[in-house]
Length: 184
Ligand code: 5GP
Ligand code: MG
Ligand code: MG
Figure (tube, rainbow, N blue to C red):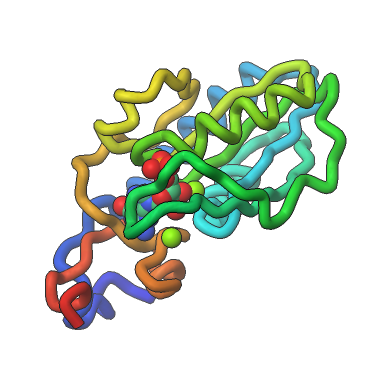
C-alpha cells in the first residue's frame, strides 16, 4: 500500500516507511555491535512484531536465529490486564542463549513485563528488548528497554504490523485512524 492509498480510514501518517527503515538500520548497527561474536536469538511476539522482525533481522549483518511467541492478554476492553496466556510457546530452549525480544509497541508494558519474567525464569544468558514504538505510559512500569525506535504520544496507531480489528497490519508506515473507523 502506498501512502496515497490512505483512503478515508486513516487520519495521518505518524512515521513514514523511510523513517522506519532508517531507524531500523540504526538499531541494527547497535545490536550488531552489542552481540558481536555471540549467538543471538530474536524472539518476536506475534502478530504485531512480524514486520519489525523481518526488517530488523535483514538489517543485521550478524547471523541470528528467530523464534516466535503468541500471547493473549485477558481483560475487558482495549486495556491489557497483565494477565497473560501463552497461545504459542517458543520452539527453542533458551537456557544459556542470548535472547532479544522484538516488539512492535509497548503501551502499558504489562504484557512485556509478564513476558520478561516468564522468559527470564528459563535462565537465558541474557534477555533484552528492542521495540519499534513506545508510549509514555510504558514509563509507569519498570522495564529496562535497551533499544527503542520511536517514543510516540498515547494515541492508537496502526500499520507496520499493528492492527485495528486485524486490519491495517500491511500498511508500510505507522498512522492514526480517522474517528469514523471506531464509531463504525
Ligand atoms: P501493553 O501490555 O504494553 O499495554 O500492550 C501491548 C500490546 O497492546 C501491543 O503488543 C499491541 O498488540 C497492543 N497495542 C498497544 N498500543 C497499541 C496501539 O496504539 N495500536 C495497536 N494497533 N495496538 C496497540
Ligand atoms: Mg506486540
Ligand atoms: Mg492488536
